[in-house]
Length: 171
Image (cartoon, rainbow, N blue to C red; front, side, top):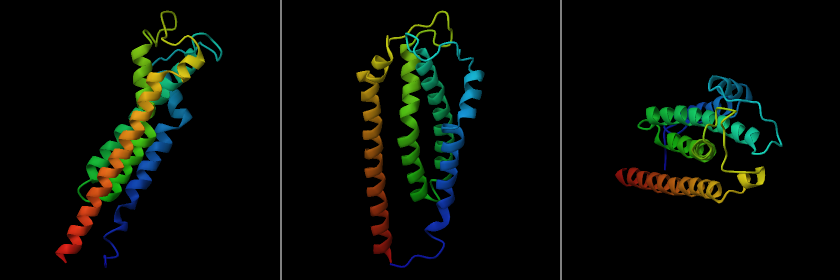
């Protein structure tokens, strides 16, 4: 089982770029503040307010930033898939695993909080922070994302094994 020195490690940079996208777009607090201001998300509510708008709005902005990072990661994966399918698959799996739960949170918050971006009209489906944290629908979405990521890993792993065995048989 010999591989050329250039065949496998060539695509390592995809993982580095994917991690940089995650670090600078998906989790960077400064970028999150910029997006919050760009979306005109009101920051008038303080922790402890009822309903828990401080946490809800913070999670909404974090989800929007994660959505931007996921979109950039998926573009990177689509652009590199044909040439580097292994590294692109890993980047896809990691982006889905790390970013999509936050994206789904933002979607669910936007769906369940009418007038979220208007501090005077905003309403929430959750009356307390505990209700927000322990919402069964939020938990189901997070578990669904995790199960989808595991299924994605299994499918990609099988595909890579088949490709490897076909390449070995062709030799």
